[in-house]
Length: 51
Image (cartoon, rainbow, N blue to C red; front, side, top):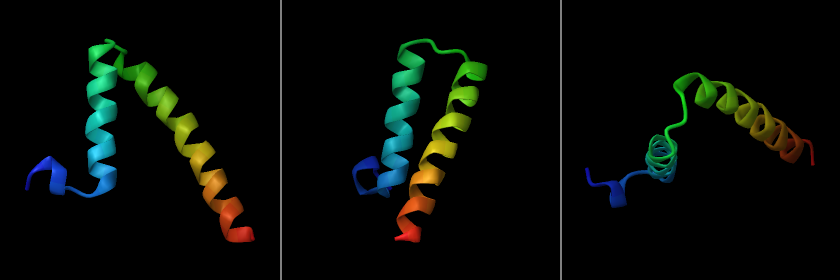
């Protein structure tokens, strides 16, 4: 499967990985940041389902 035919979340993940690697962000910093991002987007998703 080519990336252009991959699901949107896979394309986004590949783009994010590339960005983080190009900027030489440490793996622990990435994981710590992703925890915050996931919590934020989970909150947004939960708020949407409340409406």
